[in-house]
Image (cartoon, rainbow, N blue to C red; front, side, top):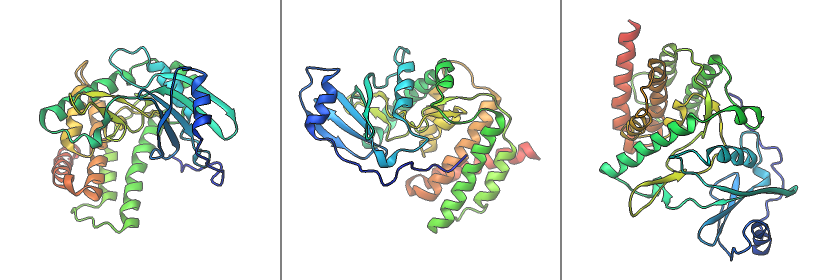
Amino acid sequence: MYDDFYFQPDAPDPVLNDEKVMALVHQYVPGAKAVTDVDETGGEARTYAIDDDLILKTQRPQQLRPSTSLRKEVLFLQQLEDVEGVRVPKVIGYGHPEPMVEYTLMTRMPGIAFRNAELIGEARQESLKELGRMLRRIHTISQKKLRVSGLLFGDQSPVDVRWRMGNVFNYLTDMIHAKGIKWDYPISTEIIGRRMMFTMPDTWKIVALHSNPGPEHVFVDPISEKLTGIIDFGDAYFSHPVIDLRRFRSPEDRAAILAGYGESSPLSKEFMAIWKIACVIADIIAMALSPEYKAAATTELDQILSQISVQLS
């Protein structure tokens, strides 16, 4: 793992006027009518909603960095376009007509972000199982075009995967210390990380990941309470599939995602060993940052550490 950085942090970041936005859109959809909203919550990108079914996504120049790319997102979405059971935005157009304007025109994902949907009970569990099913299909597509493109960074060997996951524990330890977060679990995060990494098997299961199919990038229909799809593939990289499955902090939510992921075929012992490490990472994050999940995360962490203690004894 390497620190990311911005290429041009002082570059101007103009909001495109409606005339400029519609000129770009009309190259592909002549009948489009108007800009209806501008959203800057995405960080690296700014999105312009067009009518009720299109999104023009632009790269914010001062937020350009190696790990994020509109071209990469376009390529990944194109590989997923005809995959049955996968619902992602459809790319309509892409361009980079001038140095400070790079854009993608795509269909708009219906529904609202999972984090805003307030799903509970069976509806929540089923939507997360469907997310697991969808992620399994995404992870099993042909990797050839993604690999030869040169657009995705990431892991290429078992050592790389081990390095990545071990460094997450280091990052979390540093974050807890830097923020002055009280860690009242009887075992330090450093020791937890070392114990878990000792159990990690070598793995050649390396695929292109979304990187963060979490509550902000997973969409549901607020009426039917069903999953509508996944957005934002601009941070994609190569690593082990479990990394895409750990983005929800609730152990119950993650268990539902895993259940859906494993429906089509059994998951190997190797996969499940790495899954436990990913769950411990999610538990530490929840215990440090999400009081609403702290009790459940602590219980899961207790169980996993107890299991590996037996394994290592």
